[in-house]
Image (cartoon, rainbow, N blue to C red; front, side, top):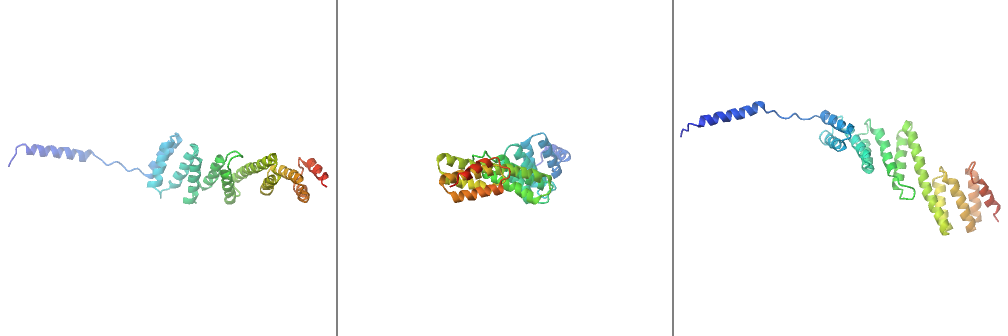
Amino acid sequence: MYRPHMPIILLLLVLIFGGCSSTQTLPKQRTADDVFRDAKAALDDDDLIQAASLFDIIKLQYPASQYADDAQYYLAEINFRKGEFILAAFNYSMVRRAYPNSDFAKEALFKSAVCYLELSPPFDRDQEYTKKAIQAFSEFQAVYPTDSLSLKALDHIGGLRTKLAERYFTIAEQYVTLGSMKGAVVYYDAVIEEYPDTHFYEDALVGKMTAQQRLKKYDDLRTTIARYRGTVRSGKRGAEVDQIEKELP
């Protein structure tokens, strides 16, 4: 059945859809270069949330691109800036695991150790992260022994080992206060055997002598004095050791 208004409707439909097809264009797909440029700009502007989101896109959508290792490293940097040191250490370590040939591999290894250094608590707390920091800095030294950062790693290791020595020494002193000389000797020995490179070594030896003197362990005391004489050079407590030795029966 002919309807006189049908040609007009058809013409309108042609004009509408034809106009749309002539003017509508598909959005251009973003490349890895585009995403990385925007991510780096956001990071430079300290927009950490946006930067992290864009770096995540690179890792997920462009894992084979030249920016994959950069994205992994900068995600760790964002965690570090935010004080998320456990997550930062994980992401730094992933740089070396996933991209061992990355230009960021060396710096990532060092900064993973710095994360544990930041997590290391005062000497009277649990020292799990202190030990992890020592292990991480030691690994850096083993992998990059001639790098300038290796000297910084050595300094950090020294400070961390001193913290551990202080912890054991303090516990030994607490046992002395409690009148438990045997317990004190155990912790003085921990300092003597494990941390002879720290300044607590001499104090631990003298503390052990005093404890052995009170326990009347004179043969053991003579052995400790001999060790002091053989290992401590220009010690600050030599006069005390001389006095302890004079009092031996």
